[in-house]
Length: 224
Length: 50
Image 1 (spheres, rainbow over the protein chains, first blue to last red):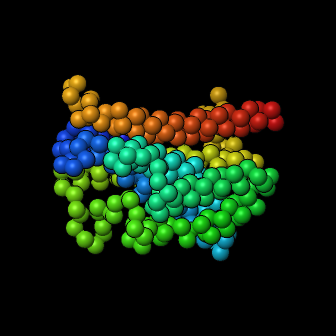
Image 2: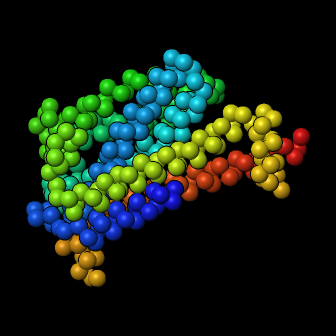
Image 3: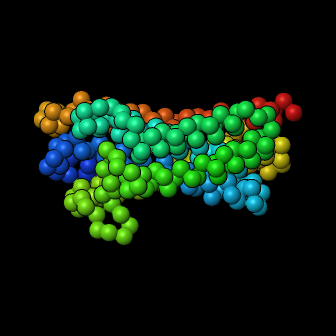
């Protein structure tokens, strides 16, 4: 978490103080330093969950079940942040909080997929059945990921196309790009830190009746 | 400083966006930590009862 915090602070200083204002959007463009990493994370976490869902269903690896469950709330949070910050940016730039544009609508569907998964987890008493049903939902919903990614190319949308591509040179200035990349790294480090905390709690719940959990609690001095 | 806070007239959009982001980021971390701590205490209590 320390690494994430350092990247967050550097990224925020770079984005809010050091980066020059955009020649068209002025200072409102600074919302991208939270909006874009949140949107990237929403896709990354869902893909990560889908890979773990496939591992769970094919090889029945228990840790994948724990990872999916621990990641969902974070994925939902980042998707919410991408939608909320995008909406706030849209008001001064597009003149509206929301449009039923392909990118925005498919991102909203992603939020519903996350919420659906979370709801499913509390709908079943048996955790294993809940996880397997959830895994199926995650795999079905993975079709939405390329739709979100390529929606700005496939359809005529109000949302701008990607400014940063893996294959082409980025279309934004290096002074604006570095804080954005720092924020992206920070979000990824943050996600793994919080997910691991949640995983630890889930593992304790699964293994609460085993000797090693009791021994660990006693060894760490948590019994006092 | 005031000029920076005004964000060229976009301060009323930029700062609420960052505030929402900060609340969600901090909440997720704090709630994960608190949930783990609470569950550990519950487990210890259960161990003591046994």
